[in-house]
Amino acid sequence: MREIFKSGSVRGRIVTSGLLPRKEVRYVPYLTTWAIRNDANSMSYKNERRFGKMEKYDPKVTPWQVSERDFPREGSSTEKLKFLLSYSILAPSSHNSQPWKFHIRDSEVDIFADKDRWLKVADADQCELYISVGCALENLLIAAEHFGYAHQEEYFPEGVDSLAAVVKLTPQEKIEKTRNPAFFEQISKRYTNHNIFETRKIPKAEMAQLHACFYEHGFWIFSTNEGPYILYTEEELRHRIDELITRADAIQLTDRAYTKELAFWFGQGAFGTPWLMAKISQLALTYLNISKGQTKKDSEMLLSAPALIALASAADNRKSQVMAGQIFDRIALTATSLGMAIHPMSQILEVPEVKAELRELLEVPEVKAEVAKLLPEENVFPQQTFRLGYAEPEKEHTPRRPLEEVLV
Image (cartoon, rainbow, N blue to C red; front, side, top):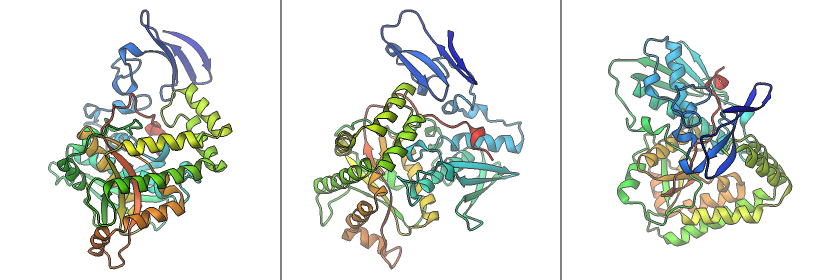
């Protein structure tokens, strides 16, 4: 190993191991290193500590390698709660923006929406911001139950939208677990899959496990593979949703403000793209018209999936958005445990006129009858859309901000 550059606090290294049949120079932003990767050995951050070595877990450089063995059983209450938050920061988020911050007070954890990481163009109504916060909250509750903490959460206790939740955590010898214990080990295995999906269908038994993720009233999933529906066949539904996705892509990718925002996040390495490719993608988004190519790619990805799903709620407010994030997190963890791939496709919800059409599409008779049991207004508010199925696994997890960076 030899150092090839040093600039400020960033250090670069080349790692070699004998003669490499194929070499790829790769920048790993979360490790701040240049590395030559041996593709023949299929090295990936997901399966290695650092450069393929199983080094000790370090929350600053190996967040995905967190292990329950490192729980500080003899540590202080603050140290233990900080460790629980090591699982919160692994939650999914819109554009991997990780828009959350935490504050520990005695036996309580405050969870804040980090408005500095709000995608003001793509997520103008901040729905995805709060769904992301809900995912982080759910990971905290899952980890808390695993390590023997009873929990009580209060949503927006101060009446302002910056403080999304306060969680009171009480260690107990025996607690009543409200969540599937199997969720915990899936937290560090979960990832978003951007690959083309296989055509094989999802068994009804596995769909039933997704429906079991709903602990809250007033939420449900609408899936194209769970018909028949009165107004549409499954194929008609899929193509109708594809039309909406295609139109949303066309609107967004020709919007200069949107592509500039997307380019910024690509340039930050938020998607786990190697540094050089991230910068190339940033330049392409900034200076080239990629609308047709990206729209075609999104259509191929969507139509390849055996199930296109909308997570919807009977209310549309900040609390319901956070709770929708909690449900989506449980769905993602369930899918991971079943060997399934999941990929949010939120652009259909990011363009107001397209979102309105999706809402109309969801208001088929069966859905309206189901909602009527919950609220007399028969409202249908789509909160998250995603494709579900089977695919080749992603090679790497997306990078994560160090825990210390999100503590206030």
